[in-house]
Length: 345
Image 1 (cartoon, helix red, strand yellow):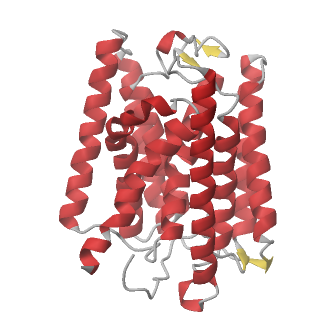
Image 2 (tube, rainbow, N blue to C red):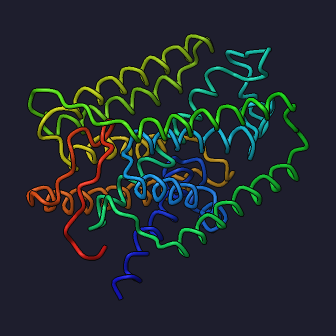
């Protein structure tokens, strides 16, 4: 029974990742909810594979985020090819800040890869781990891991085939080679970072509420900057600057004594709430009525808040138990595992 119950967190992550990535974002309306099952092998499969690989090797969130970035490169560079398709979905995404030598658009590249890294993969992992009683241990055995890898591969193949059927655009050989090189570099970095010893700094960790508020403010500012009608190059620079500041701040804060799993959940919760509010002004790709879109956005926002409250309560209980606390620097510097003493998830 315990072995079977261990699969539930993986199943939850499998469906939560596409729900956050496409529906909470407001990209797809509630009337397209059936597409969740088609999107789950790609998004959910990718999230579970990344999480299982990292936890089996004792890696922390830095490695998870690097692998999440690799996922974004794979999806947007190969599966949808939006990094190179000048008229992907008839949106002309590559016109602002166009890099003619690469056939890419600077602001779109920065934005789409960043949202996959944070929202599509990392935030769902943090949320489900916060609910689970085995947050730093593998959830799947060997057979389960093989199954999820097959599902992920199927998701990549099916989504790529669908895109090629919908749009005849095909990136150049040089662009595909560039994607391959980027994937190798990112995976190698994830391995290297995962093997590093954690860095500790003197000083007490900040209030979890302050960390969460900073996460909400930073993520909201990021989305607002992307929405502004700016020069493409200026927009790309601003987005990169916000990413750099966020990384440096979290690196510094998470290395202090007293940083717990609740501190890890706080910025992820802020990012989740950002998607929730940003969905309301977002125009969905469904083409339905605005009233239905808004009702769907409200429903997804309520679900997001409910999940965050549950995760917060479960994590708060675990944090007060010394055996349940994680190492300092869990968000950006943890590379060791302190195993929960609970027996099941």
